[in-house]
Length: 265
Image (cartoon, rainbow, N blue to C red):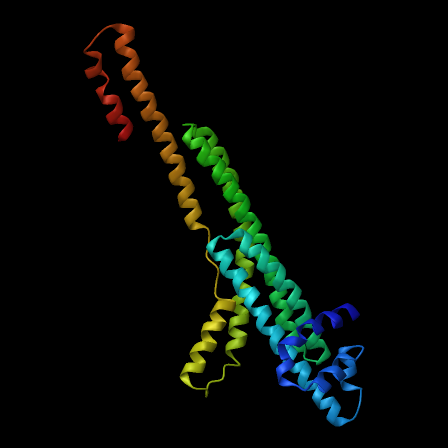
């Protein structure tokens, strides 16, 4: 806990313009955030509470930014960006949970813990997609070598990763839908339309559903069909070149002309 108290103070420069140096120095001298409510007179306690609330806003914005960036990267299949922001989000969310506990706000703690759980799901889905991408790359290499059997092997392995991804995806989308519904109940209905629009856009970025793996599966099917056709066409060309030399019959070209047509059909 002491380590988290020290970590939270790293955000002090972000709120320094809102408070006097004396206020910040007094707050920074506290051993733990819980001392905010047990130290000094009422004026000092109120000042300390104001600083902790300002720190919470900064931490919340950064946590949400990293969370939504990781989610968007997962959507776009940007594996490195997703992994990087998921790691940063977990660190900041841990600070947010600590701040909320110090403020004795169980509702906020639940929200941040839910985000942390979703981040772990994002990381797992990201890894499955990354592994599928590796298999797809090997399948593409096999396709260039006109080896549909290897293409099928690698796309089958890639599909297994997609299947595991989709199991987690169903749970993650269900959790985000439930969080979306719960948050909608607290919507500031009397706020101006522009404020509501921004609020809903942010809510969608946080809890909007992630896509399935239909695109990848269609791509794998196309890859297999293309590799098989390429192999057969190459075989047909080789056959038409080989037969005249082997048999010495010029009309054999006409006899095998239907091979290419049959393959294309």
